[in-house]
Amino acid sequence: MKTWRLGIMAMLILLSGCAASRLSDAERLVRNERYDEAVKAYLKEIEPQIINGKAVVYYDRDVITGLGEVYWFMNKYETALKILQRVATKDPFFGKAQYLMGLCQEAKSEDRKAVEIYSRYIKIPASDPYRYVMAGRLDWLTRKLITREVQNVLSQEQTIADTPVSENSVAVLYFMSQSEDPQWAPLQKGLAEMLTTDLAQATELQVVERLRLNYLMEEMRLGVADMLDESTQARYGQLLGAKTLIKGAYMVLPDMKMTLDAGIFESNAAVFPKPSNYEGTLAKLFQMEKQLVLEIFDYFGIQISLEVRERLLQTPTDNMQAFLHYCLGLDALDRMDHKSAQRSFQKAIQIDPAFQMARDRLVPPRVWEITHNRNLVRMQHDVAQFVHSLPRGGPERLLKPEEGLITAWARLQRMGVYQGAGFLPGNETREGFSEADTKGARVLPELIGLPPDPIRQQQ
Image 1 (cartoon, one colour):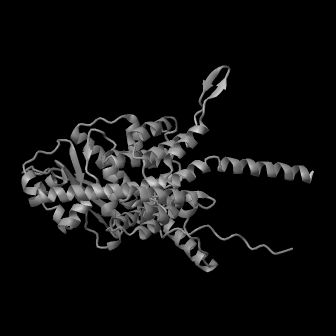
Image 2 (cartoon, rainbow, N blue to C red; image 1 turned 90 degrees about the vertical axis):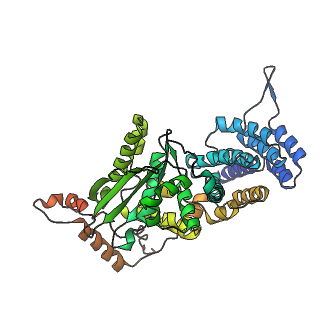
Image 3 (cartoon, rainbow, N blue to C red; image 1 turned 60 degrees about the vertical axis):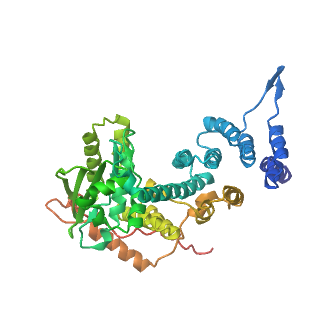
């Protein structure tokens, strides 16, 4: 019996080894820059098979994608795009084909088209390493485009001063924090990011990227207060390329109540409309933000579909601490501090594992390094090497935060904090947690990890 089982296992190992090395010869030829031979090697894998007197070619996405990659190395970008498009049509969530299509567009100097392709990374499964490669490259290319565009606008400011901007162009400025406690300052970027993302759901609007606003402020050495100055509003609207500006202020009070003042302003208008006021608990922040988005749509006369409305009203997280860490991550990314940003995003996910916006920002450090490269050929070689060297568990293992243990006493103390924050006695003590929610008890300390496995006595 043991011999039979060993034989089956050996056969499975052999077959898996054959499958893994099926394209190794073609890949080796590519690494050695023997592209003509590599094309022949790939084509050999999809030679027509004669079935019932007819020549049949079976679809093999790995072979076809490899073929597209070879043509990219040969600088035949149009041919590569046509080949890769076949894979993208049949397997739209196959990351490698999408990534290579983006490289083709970059090589053709079609950076905007490349950005559009790389933006699809959020639809690629988390187990696919090219999801993170696309995310890293999207960040680099977006920064490159915005830097170039903002510098160009600033150098030609006098020339374009009277150039009309699109009627449906809109930019979300950073909201002014009026809270005494500095811990709420990061909400500035988080609110702007959420509003920008939600407004982009309406295809009728041309929404200015938050990074463009951030880079303009850095180049002109402006603070949030400078951008909100009504006397310079027309100028900054012109520089951002936005006819309409969304701006305002927020305040978080010691009792965790929150006010949000937001206004819709025409950048060149002489009379400014009265801002809308929103009040509620900090836990209701996301609902206030959604209400503001719907008001902006009404202002532009945009009718959104039921599907878009349902997607729009979904809150990214119910935990304010998770959102604060997300905001800190955005700020770190703006400063190109990738390691700090990833730590913040990982903390956000530890607190709320369902926080998808934070998950979408995760990129392994090595991927960040290799995708921020001007040399496309060098980057592609590094990407291929990275993918082939991934450890068991794939890219998700590289993103797993370090786990630490805490003492039993510290754990008991933390549990006491949670219980104390979640219970406020009232007329009906059974409704204590409901009352606590309205008083801001949702803002809790960072969650701790799972308890360590119990120590079992050895028999």
